[in-house]
Structure formats: structure tokens, C-alpha cells
Image 1 (cartoon, each protein chain N blue to C red):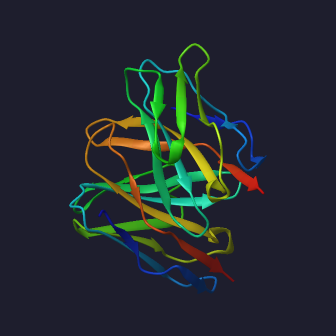
Image 2 (tube, chains in turn cyan, brown):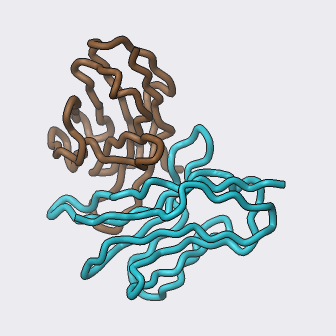
Length: 116
Length: 113
């Protein structure tokens, strides 16, 4: 079964600074990876996903992630954060359910706190 | 705009009560999911359904059951609520396929006293 490790439970950062949220996944022949964001008192929404092709994936709100197969990592980055980026971020890997599609296996989450 | 709605945002129940959490999606998705979210544990899959009247256990099904009588509605049932079921419950839906995005509802925060 697939698994995901998010290496930081909380990341404090000042506004306009760059940020990296780290994610490692268990190795697999093929892997589909996702980053979701949860703003306070809301459900999750998709930031970006890696399916195949280019290892650099661009998402919404200026976020991007790089798929690194040799390191089994999928770190999320943003060059300059805003206060509004304060949220919890979840890395997830797709685990196939034969015939039914996929289920998502989530990491524990990283809380990004942007300070002014 | 895609939409997944959950019947309650906050719910307070007593130990031993039967609890129903309802989820409705308007996207004609085949797959629907129930997760629970706990601090430090992320989201864990309780049950999912890939078609009407079909259901499969997820990673933590104990103490829960589900019902899917219509394509757009997926219910999570706590037969006899216990304090260790105090949690945030999130419903999601998706099309069939390994790479399809899951769309989430806003969540129900359940407190069992």
C-alpha cells in the first residue's frame, strides 16, 4: 500500500518570503501525486497534481511542485507567500482500487502560518 | 461550479446515539468517499462507494456503516456513537478513474459527549 510522509507539521514564514513544504512518498512503479489545501473552516481543494510528463507541475495561486523519482519526493514551493496562503496543506498519493478508480492516501498535513 | 454539500457543519451527540451524516453532490460523479480528519493524522478513508448500492471498506471502517440509495447521495452512519468518534468528517466525490480529482465538501465537525 502507498504511504505519504509530510516532514513538517508546521511551517512559519514571513509574508513575501519563499516557502517549501516537503512530502515523501513510498516507492511504486507508477505514482500519481496531489497537493490539496484546506483553508480555515473549509473543505479541501486541489492545488495541483502530477500524473506524468514534466516533473515540474504548476498549480493555482502561484504554487508549484517538483516530482523527484530518485528521492521519492514531491515538494511544494511558492516563491513569495501572502497572508492569505495561511492554511493546512496535504500531500496525497493515489492508490489504485482495481476496477473502481483510485483512493487517496494522505499525509498528516503541514500547517503554513504566514506572518506579517 | 462543482458542489459537494454536507448536511451539518457542526453536530453534538451523546454516547450511544445513532448518527447520520449526509453528503450530496451535483456533479453526477460515480465515486463518493467518506474520510475522517484528525490533527496529526491527516485524512483517513472510512468507506467509499463506486455506484449506487455499492460500498467498499476503507482503512478505518470499524464503528461505521454507509448507505448509497441514489447516485448523488452518500450517507455515513454511526450505529452507536462513541467519544473516540469525535472528529471532522469530510465527504468527497469523483469520476471513475485513477487520476480523477476528488472534490470535497466543507466537512462536519462531530462532537460526541
